[in-house]
Length: 439
RNA sequence: UCCUCAGUAGCUCAAUGGCAGAGCAUCCGGCUGUUAACCGGAGGGUUGUAGGUUCGAGUCCUACCUGAGGAGCCA
Image (cartoon, rainbow, N blue to C red; front, side, top):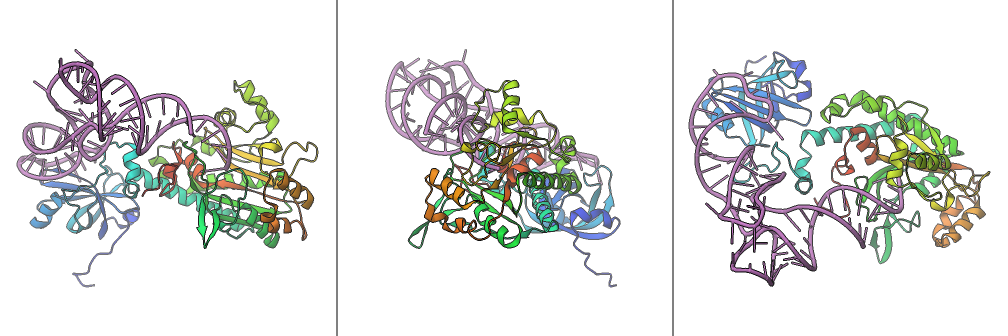
């Protein structure tokens, strides 16, 4: 091998495998400390952080001078020898021989996000840069793992991915507000759920799921709401409410276990106490709506029977369990038109909400669907929904209808819970909230 | 939509109705092991906008704008 051979580029996460070797690392300057004739640049490459050491006498004079003036987030490449260093964060350090700058951030316009504190408005305004911080990187890695685990779960269980359209002709549920768009002279709406379409694909494929963005134009302004969020929605032919609940708890248990297995370092970076996550094992507790109301009242809540659970009620209830709890059989009148009534108590819907522990609220909502044609038509009329718009949906009950059911799981709420963070806005790269459409 | 709170240097925040300040960031200098390094120095302001009260307003009043927290609704 020629003595002039250029050393290979390595990712920082693999630095430990190259101890004693000369390598090149490229990335962005995370921080730079100076101590006389020593420079300590910390490089960030998306896979980790690594500190390099530049001695004034072991690198060319011009290189040292240039490095001394480097500003935060300048992009660069460092050639050097990897050395085990117990004091370094990753356990390894780079003894620099040379340093090449790709782009020096000008001092007149320094990188706005400094290592100190910032307010949320400023950070949101600079979301495109905020993503580079260690905390955001850790959250996005966990989001990636959640999505990977969800798809792995369904794919390994015989489900077929069959995505629903994002542009739709009418409301899936009459209640929520929709974003309206102009569609070649007609009105169209951004989907708020792929469920109705998933029912059609389930009749074709048996077990299906769709996974994509959904939109709600509600003026909700809380830590649990985005106007654009990602939802995974399985739908299963022949499934009844018990099957839906069992599927939901198996999915959540798998996702939690997968994140615990693959994201230890990221959870640690977020200072997430993983003990509550370790508890998440099957089976999850199941209580009826009636029991939930009793428990909430006994715990000092003031909810009225017959209404939906509020955010505070959910927290009171979830605090009584060490893992997610499933609340089933809500009063039919507070739930969607397509939910199958309980045969023994027709005023109740065969539905289930899963509440995450630690006050993270509802992460799953699902039900057994009405499969009887006449009952479904009656419900559509009762809710004053346009029957003609649901013609294709009613067809599913005209041609070999069977009991079926499914649920929707909000990815951002699951990620927020697993990360132990306050607000869902940090769980998606570019959040859309009622008052923010930028960047 | 409703309720509450906040807007002062690039950022995070101080300033009894009486001279607009500090830390970080940036620039200059010092230091051969720094860990949000440290030490010394410099530059940096139409106090969100428009009115009003007052001898005097960052501070009090009114309206508006922007943002945050919460409620309702939801995943």
